[in-house]
Amino acid sequence: YEDVNHYEQKAPHARKAHPHPDHFFPLHVAIGAAGENSKAKLIHSSIEVGTLSYASYQFTSDSS
Image (tube, rainbow, N blue to C red):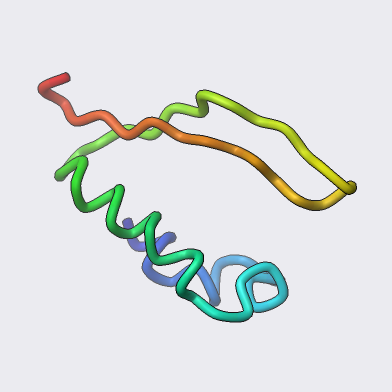
C-alpha cells in the first residue's frame, strides 16, 4: 500500500507517466476496495507505441 501511496517518490519518472494524478487515483480505489492483505494478479499485459501500457490487474482479498 505504501508504495502506491508514495508512487511519486518510489518511481523515478512517475510525474512523466502521470502528470496529473486523476488517471492514477483509480488504482487507490481498487486497492482499497479489495481490502486489507489483498493480492494483485496481472491478467493482461500489452504495450502500444513503445511506451503505452495496457496492463490490467485483478485484486483479490484473502477470503476470495
